[in-house]
Image (cartoon, rainbow, N blue to C red; front, side):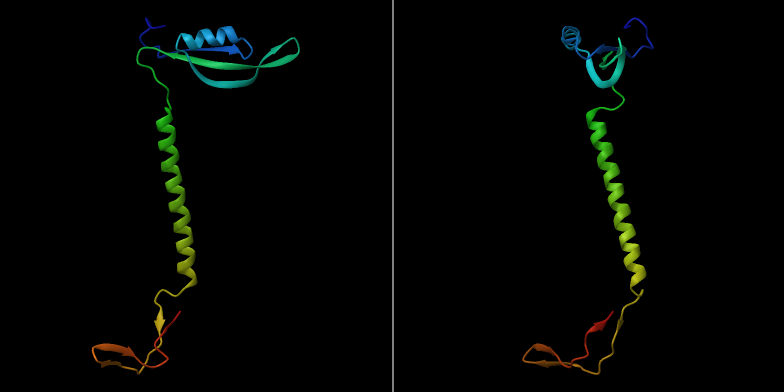
Amino acid sequence: AASISNCRGVYLHVISYNQPAISFYNKMLFKLVRRLPHFYYIRGQHYDSYLFVYYVNGGRSPCSPLEVITSFVVDFRAFLKMVVARFWNKEERSTPRWSRCKESTTLLVSQNNKRIIGGDDTRCHV
């Protein structure tokens, strides 16, 4: 396979109970890709298979563990932004665009370098 320039990997599968073959493939640096449930049907019985790959000529997995984690983080951040944006938009629709403060005739009075707010109607009404 390494002599074929456009070949990037050699794939094989092995029945799940063939432990000597699985050990051999691991020893030869094949990478376990996935378990294939019910891949084989032998004498009326289903058996699982393991799929292995050996990369050649600079071949590599299309999704390294780091790429999977990075993709998950990016997607999760986008999801959070979408949820926050929806919540924010819903909140904006339920309150007026400009909060209205009730006018007060009370002034700030200064006594001994302390400011005292007088009156009861100085709060904002939303």
